[in-house]
Length: 294
Image 1: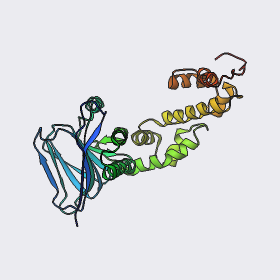
Image 2: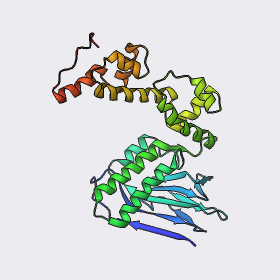
Image 3: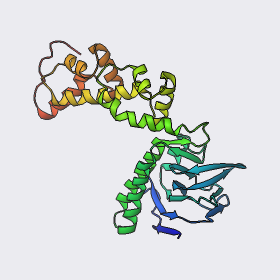
């Protein structure tokens, strides 16, 4: 039996929120679902996340198949054509939204260049949409700032996770392997990084590992390791104030503290010592003598 749920909200005045939903909901087991909108008919963004089944989006006389974990995004005023597969109709969750700054941001990031998108980790995006639907269903317009916050989280996650569906080859299994490795790599980030060893753990070579890792995490393996090391160093700089910067460099995975200083400054726009001193000034405790200048 088909299940349809529509939630609607009144339009907010211009510039009140960066982004805000006009309506949202979900469709389940709806055979024969089909939408055809002429250009200019819908003046909000239209985001759908497929949660099961199969459906299609048509764009410039080409048809793109979307399955669970895929999404599509139409810009305001776009011509829209999308429909369910006759034998395996899709389930999806959807949002129509607008806002004072979102059009420029999504355009600048290139999201106007494609309609269909693959989401690297769709469960996170789906849970955020569920939070928004629950808030709209239970509280209507009682907490508009929370609604806007949830909408922003959905957009931020979509921006972070989406890849054009037209990209050659999905590599879904390879991306899943990379995502499963992330916690292990994070835990081992302060140890010497061996690219070939991590590629072997993923069951591939170093070149494929780097390509799929970037698609899964949005950055190279070394960038991810560096991010984890800097995070560790910042924590030690604040919590272990008796340790020298050189000792913290070693505990964060860097043999040479000069290279650590360089990476830290590139990441945080200040030296490790300057970062630490911010917290000394806040606590009014003078920093210990490190024995050398940074």
